[in-house]
View 1 (cartoon, rainbow, N blue to C red):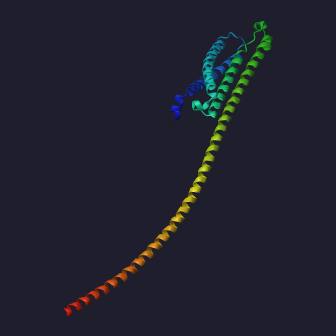
View 2 (view 1 turned 135 degrees about the vertical axis):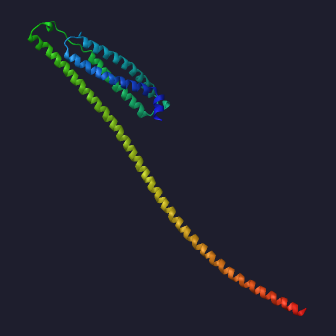
Length: 244
């Protein structure tokens, strides 16, 4: 039943595409930050290739995300018209906002360019220590900050999923309690029916015994009457024979 629902709901199909594209984009973004932290030139071939691949992935992700945003906006006014619950619409909006914020953070990070200084091309140990090392440390700080943000984001998603699981478990526990109370009530009713059935059965047995006794007594009286009647008829016949 769930698979047929997923096939009929375009949002769920696009959602799967967006999450898959996001899973592919995150390693590209991480790789870009790593390369940028290790290079001092914005024209570095490896950096340019990583940036191009990342921008392409973000562009595709943004297009799919725009479709999700339009879908959420369309169903927000009347969820029940589309067969959706308010909780499901809230979940979809939260997903769109989270993915949109993550994409926006990536784009903001791409706007940061590697600063070049004319003295950066001079030879000498002092030039390298003065310009190259601070830039490398800044890149590493940005990379570490992004990693921390990603971890916090994942922890927040896990917390939300756990909250949903806890709510579901609570609902199931409440339903189990209700079913237990109903079963106890039905068990009590069955006990009452059994007791009533036993009383009625006992009364029926007593009545049947009484009726059998009465029938036996009636049978003995009828036999005596029949014998007396036959004797009377025989005597009457003998008298008639003698008279005639």
